[in-house]
Image 1 (cartoon, rainbow, N blue to C red):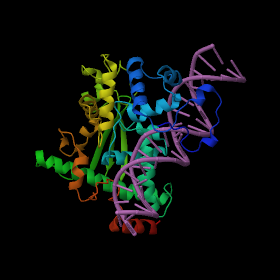
Image 2 (cartoon, rainbow, N blue to C red; image 1 turned 90 degrees about the vertical axis):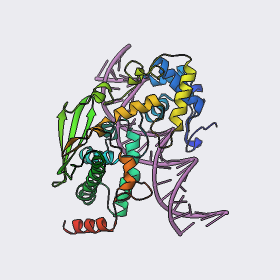
Image 3 (tube, rainbow, N blue to C red; image 1 turned 180 degrees about the vertical axis):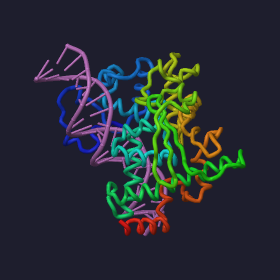
Image 4 (cartoon, protein in one colour; image 1 turned 30 degrees about the horizontal axis):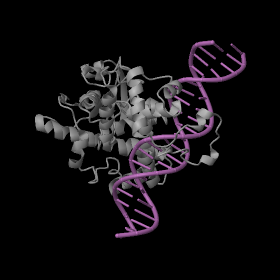
Amino acid sequence: MEVKGRVSTTTTTIQSDDEMDLRRGPWTVDEDLALINYIANNGEGRWNSLARSAGLKRTGKSCRLRWLNYLRPDVRRGNITLEEQLLILELHGRWGNRWSKIAQYLPGRTDNEIKNYWRTRVQKHAKQLKCDVNSKQFKDAMRYLWMPRLVERIQAAAATAATAGSPTASASATTTITTTNNNNNTTYNYDNNLNSFEAHSGNMMLSPAIMNNNFGGSRSYTPENSSTGASSDSFGTQVSPVSELTQDYYNNVTAGNNNNNPNPDYYQQAHDQLSFLDCITSPSGLFSQQLDFQSMEPNTPWIPTNGDTSNGFWNVENMFLFQQLTDNM
DNA sequence: AAAAAGCACAACCGCCCCCAG
DNA sequence: GCTGGGGGCGGTTGTGCTTTT
């Protein structure tokens, strides 16, 4: 499929022979493999020359985006979890549309994905409420209605999980989410009574999994720093033939349904990198097992049966509460 | 069953900043 | 100080899939 110009080729100014050959639009399997192959052997960076050297008729920017948003081994796809939703709401309230900054606190998520989430889900809710997404009205609705509901759902799911292993779990006054950025932990204590977050920076609660996986910051992949190198046939290790490796890697990247990268190596890595979920605490302390909230969601009353984790909030009760809230402003 | 509407997401664009020469 | 290339970022849009009518 030769696609030249995603919108309209009439607006594209062709300036050189190189640019004349540039491809646009969806990436093909061959292109993906070429890019994966090249980065596996040479690392990333210098994207324009990388594109030429790899024989890709793409701009450097296009290669960079494709790698960072799709092909990179630690990219995590699938539904945004409740904890992630909570963090996005909180961090957006703090920083606005600083998607890349927000993404740094959500391991494996790309700025593009968070941006898409915000536009498709959050802005939809604002639209439903007939108010601007940046209005005080909507921000208050998020802080006093949406976020507490998310916390309740997280705690309900945590309690469900804890009940299975510990009969002492109960509702908590605070919900703690710990995530990392450049190996610095930030612990978010959400006060259920005050409807507010309090952040604590530092290296407390830094689990070995986090220490061993530098997934904060740029999360860039190089064979040297990739923890996938722990596996003998992983992407980060020089094995031959590379084409088989990358084909296998690519198949796994593209085969996922919901998809955390299903390649066992990368899946394990992604699993390790989600360790901030491990750090969600209950009053009785740290849960020992990973909390898979997505799999729990269908069992919680907040979740619609279609599995959409974001649409279950604006029910009649909450619409009423929102009305009360806005009436008192 | 077909058409329309809605949704999710990949990809591109333009602007900006940084930095080496 | 200036310039050009590289790269990061936020905004926008096209497309394919799903849901609704």
